[in-house]
Image (cartoon, rainbow, N blue to C red; front, side, top):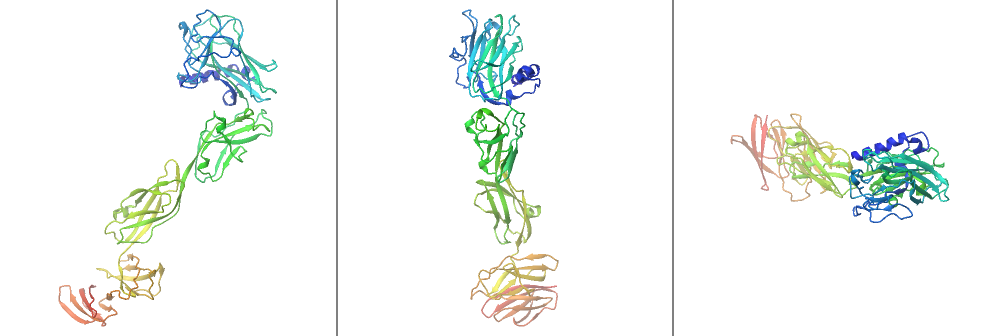
Length: 578
């Protein structure tokens, strides 16, 4: 990593020193050699890990006129030899060993061109480069370094010449002497030129040194790029929720390099591989500087980049400039439209939380917790997973749970790739099991011990009933689907809500007499005649009378009423007279 940093710094230093040659103007801030659309690259191969350390065959003789020497040891004594290798040899301890420029410290990938050059100012390399963008501004660059780790009288010095196919020189550039003993640092050299109307050019490289004592160099990564202002996207990848509207702005300012009006086209790739153009497809309708995706779904997940071209040139890959790529992550979502806890009776063993829940993923984890009051009543937190299509979560009730009001807290495990609402606080009520059906058309409240009720409000199917204020409610007709409950206020101001009761429409439903009244005056409600025997708490018999008669208990105390109906039904009630 340190070597790569030094290499980049060296190239930037060169641009500052040799700005005129690199750009053909004095502004040294040219970045086309990094960001311009790549049209040609010669890295000499070897990028596969299975490639041998030394390339087994030479470049075509029409391309390189020097002699291929796999050892580069110049045993024949001839000058002008080269090798293509993953690491240059250290001959006689006077040469540096260089790794491939692109893959330093990795001998499994990349070749470089190492050369022991002649000293007769000769052309040693020539190639034809096709598929350039005609009429455009291009930039040539190459990475070079001297092999010599000691100073020599003859320095390596190269000249690059670009010609059209008719032989006319379009541009040329002389590197000057490559410095020896330069701490083994690659340097970037280059220049800009105009392709005019040419789609093809010839590149010539001349060894411009006149001596042979020294004159040894390495060369790698020869490139030609389209030189236009860069197209930039935000540096950070973007993450959105399923269904969210996406907007990604790009930045581009034409400096005259592209013909107006400028054209834009957003491209999409599932993998983001910028080295495989065929993996990028046009995003339909996205032809402005800003990418807009309404209601994004998981099909929008992937990589995006913007192509910019001059008028009429968008379909020509050679003539358009591409932005950096940006990864868009579309997270799965889960939405909770509503949550409901049904009425619960204290004699139940569990209840279900009913959810109106939708999700774009297969399942979502959840956690159910309770406030401190609810925990103290015996509820225990738990977790689970709700599968797509399910709509309920089961909650177990503690044993001997008092009637009253409670609160549960439900939250969902969003994870890294899921969007969902925050945790919800849900109140619920547990009703008391204090009403029963006494006979076919009467519902009655069980007698409390130690306190009295001061008011009653009966409900049918959740709707308030008029003219109710008693322990009992006489049904006006009976249907199996109707349910009843009652809200009562105690003498100490507490409100108690009963559980629901669905009366049974059976003609033979067993009758149970009900005691009604207070302050020592009571009567027994029953459809069947009978007698009542009255005892005090100590077992002393007080009286026996027909149940149709009013019962008067004038003294404060606790009494036991033993009721015997004519049909044989027995009932025992305890009465407290304050």
